[in-house]
Length: 350
Ligand code: ADP
Ligand code: MG
Image (cartoon, rainbow, N blue to C red; front, side, top):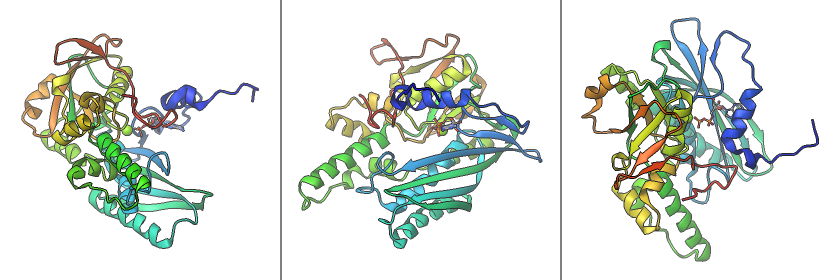
């Protein structure tokens, strides 16, 4: 090791991952795809390939137990992993759960956590098959690894988008980010006056989006039924802009999206205004929506155009350095990755 010391924050999450992946050489033929997509792709003995992914949730970085019911946390830890398998157009089958837990947590609290984990397992039809438990000096870390399967020809990589493909996104965006803003605000109010009871009922939808997100396996099953193969796909975990740029970079093409096509729920919109935030900025850069962002060939447009939960937001074009949004005023603005970077602040820079 040299004397030089660089701060992780200088690199950011993606820079750090790139640095690690540059040092990795895959040695086994069965490792078809390693670092760089939503899941690794591994050759199985049968007809299918194995998808493998892992995600870690750290107290104080990814969640705050002041307002996160621990049962929901368990559910979410599984859902975000399932989402990475969904993003490869695969079906999840097994998970392992590793816990790093301090003595601040009772057995009853761990039971609650597992109630959430198992409820998600039932919902997504995955089996909990193992894990590891260690004691930590402080806080709680949940690390889940997930295995899924797919037919090799159906795997949707980030790199597969083609010129003129249609860019689609499911559900609506920015809700989880606004839900988090509401929770943070209520926490501050509570810290100043413990008598104040939070009034969260009005914000139920957006608060639910941050505390208990769902992986869009329903869409993966619909692709199968509609005989659609997304040419590329990613789940929206870091924010639409950031995740679009991953597709652009890995596919070597540019993206062009239309502001007026970006799906935003009414409550998200109104809450953003209430917080003096631009709803579009929240939809572009707020993370943790866990919707699916994908491209399809023009030929498949007919199959999706009337789908109530799939929104066409733009298309791919040849110039990979031109990643833009056409605003409602018809000006062209460049898309920037401003997503959640936990190494920087963990907060959105609007
Ligand atoms: P996602 O948001 O879909 O979970 P990430 O941005 O966390 O994806 O990771 C992108 C890619 O980098 C994945 O292939 C992941 O396995 C890999 N990766 C992330 N962190 C590390 C690490 N510390 N070491 C090796 N690979 C990593
Ligand atoms: Mg992902």
